[in-house]
Amino acid sequence: MATTVLTPWRVAAVTGAALAVVLAFAAHPAAAQESRWRATIGDRITVDDNPLMAPGSNDHVFNNTVMADLAADWRSPRMTLGLTLGADHNTYYGPGADTMPDSNNYRAGVAASSRGPRFDYSANANYRREAVQQAELLDTGATTGDADRIGKTVSGMMGWQRSARDRIEGTAGFEDVDFQGDPDPSGRRNPFNAVTIGGAHIRQLTPRDTFTTELTARFMDADDTLNSKSQTYELTGTLERQRSAAITTRFGGGLGLAQREFDDEDDASIRRDATDPALTLLAGITYTIPRVTLSFDLEQGFEPTARGTMAQRLAASAAATYELRPTVRARFDAEYSAAWYEVEFLPSGAADRQYLTFGPGIEWRFQPNWTFNAGYRFRHLEDGDGTANGNQIFAQVTWNLTPLR
Image (tube, rainbow, N blue to C red):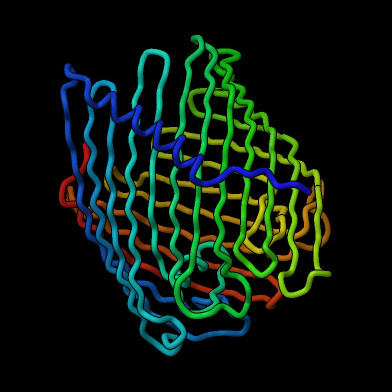
């Protein structure tokens, strides 16, 4: 099977050109410039009885995370340029701390956007370096050792307001992920790069109804022993309806095609090419009244993994927030995800991996520049290694030096 050649440098060049166009608008001589900035410092304390979500583990770990972030933006009537910088320092204590080495995380990003009467543009670039413990816990609830995950992304978008009711958008993006640190015997850490291109047509059917048609293509190349390459094409349609001032609903679906090829560089007899169709479904509802917001989202789709396979995924989330006072908000949220590592038209049979997490929390802005957050999280993981449960309690204080208004 022939693989489409779409080099990262071509996508980066297109995105860079879009960024140059956006920045050109910044030179508008009549633009009145406005700059804003915000700096935040926070400290988070977490107690977890199974931080690595290992079956049968009950080693309590105390984690202290010191966070610092800086955000700035410059605005004119036609253009916005933004910059973000951040860093975390993580230290671990307790019986299970020997499996969680101390770590530092870093992140940086730049974004630019410009809007004209009919055309608008945006471009952004991001860099993120984080310990694998944090990166993998967020995604899979598992870890494979001491390493850093380094991710770099660049993307661009151009929009055309064709008429009062029609809008057309085009997007392009490039992602590169690498790992530095100890060897990974499990095969879960595979560097990869991916190119995504897409287009969308947004139609205002009625004052309350919007229909979006979107076509997306993604090309992934994983740097692993299987030399895996994959291509996915997806066509979706989504109807969003503003049923009332309080209720918004979203329903959609689509068809996709997944193509992949991989071979073992140590054994030429191991090779597999496959082309699989898949179905995409999504639904969501948001209910908002004074002091209360309720939301529910459900999505089923497919995507390539960095291990040379295609995954069929199902994800559901629910959230509720209640404003007890102008400075105090209570919340409860839950998330469930399941993955099947062989693509089928619809998921079937037992999932290869299931993950569930839920818990309550509270946010209290006790001073104009000070915020306190606390909460509890329960986690449940089922995969090829077995079943694991975890309980987590956290508290965080954040000082906002200069609030963005």
